[in-house]
Amino acid sequence: MQVTNKLTPFFENLNFERDDNTMVINFGPQHPSAHGQLRLVLELDGELVVKAYPDIGYLHRGIEKMGENMTYNEFLPTTDRLDYIASTANNYAYALAVEKLLDIQAPRRAQVIRTMLLELNRIISHLFFLATHALDVGAMSVFLYAFREREFAMDLMEDYCGARLTHSAVRIGGVPLDLPAGWLENLSKFLAKLPEEIQTYEDLLTENRIWKMRLEDVGVLAPEEALSWGCTGPMLRGSGIKYDIRKEEPYELYGELDFDIPVADTNDSYGRYRLYMEEMKQSARIIKQLIPMYAKTEPQLMAHAPKYISAPKEEIMTQNYALMQHFVLVTQGMRPPKGEVYAPTESPKGELGFYIKSEGEPYAYRLKCRAPSFFHTGLLQELLVGTYLADVVTIIGSTNIVFGEVDR
Image (tube, rainbow, N blue to C red):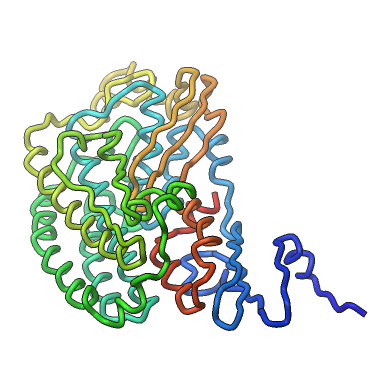
């Protein structure tokens, strides 16, 4: 009599042809190294991975469908919950897509503030990557140091928008707030100390023989494979392909700024680690250029488009027409023209873009998010085969996936 269990049909569908020499195990979805609700079904021959199947959906909340049932402004705070390690990047990508649909542009001061926040957010995200990746591999000290510095960066975000994790720091058409008094001075102090801290991380890890043994030649991703799987961001640049949307399709003020795009040609986890370290230095370089630009801008924070954007508070409180327009926008929502747009941005993890199709209603007819972690999770079914079980944790960490943007 054949003995079966309820998982047998599942594995048959996955084309797992098991023999007596292999073992099928579940890695996650409740595992601290799974970086979220990732369930990996692994077939092992001893400790060697023969097959890998990433099973997603454990965090699915239907965010894209929510975007089709909420007004454009209502949906913006929900984007915080995609890549919750870099909330501002999600806010901005969505706002940029709507602005493209409306054919409006944020004022110069808003662009300066937005670009500052985006790069500060990139540093926060990269510090989180370094801390958790190091902890996964066993470097406890780096975890503590990187989180300490991340807290200082999050203090700056909190001083600006009042939140540390889900920021909602960007608005469609600009930003909600000007920089508070003393904020630029505190930012400058943080940037002055950051290179010293990055050097500390590098001293602890870069030539550490245990770190190199765990990362070198592990998770090797050839350039053609990276392109084939739709990799972007550090995963693509870590395979030697110099592609960054901030350079290829500049948005905000990136076309005016001087910065380099780091590239690693080792194609492995170690090269990706070095890449993240260099990107933090470039983000600090970008912000330093933006600080003197802020003082040269007019104090306008939101685009002037009464049909779509509420007037400033002073006008709402003193002018009847502005109050009426504000009431309509809040209660009914804006009505963009018919059309469809896609706006790509370079989030800390790769290409983050929003596709919106409008039928002229207060709600998007279709909304689709192109999130980098989704593609990098699918890649695991190829990247993990032929590696050892101990290396699975290292490879997952080096892809820097977050499941808020995978399960949408």
